[in-house]
Length: 133
Image (cartoon, rainbow, N blue to C red; front, side, top):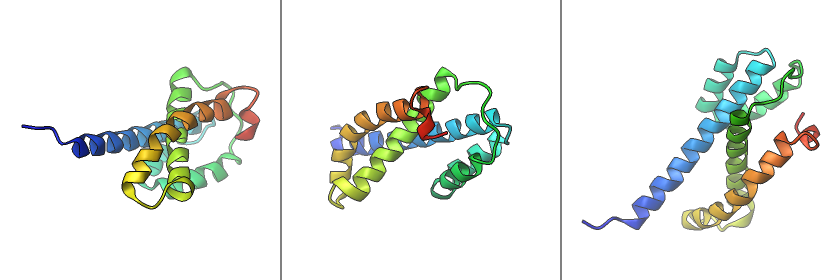
């Protein structure tokens, strides 16, 4: 029985999006916990309705107290993956690629490779954190 390459590609793309969504939810929940908010609720809301929850949390985050501790290694990695993949998909879907699903997948891979390290530097490096604090 031959393995269908389209099925492998679809599984990889869906797995990447699911992993990125879970990473983003974890990063939001951990950040909310560190700031004294209910991280479990924010994580569940971010998983259920990400297009609404992420901007609402970013607005609500400004009213929360500052973090007393820096994010741990796992939180930094998960946040970078979540933010980087979402940023890559937004750039691919809205700006770079034609509105063809195969083109989006073709362009998304290289942009994810660029956006994940960029998200790490912009969001979690001490000198650059002012961009998101």
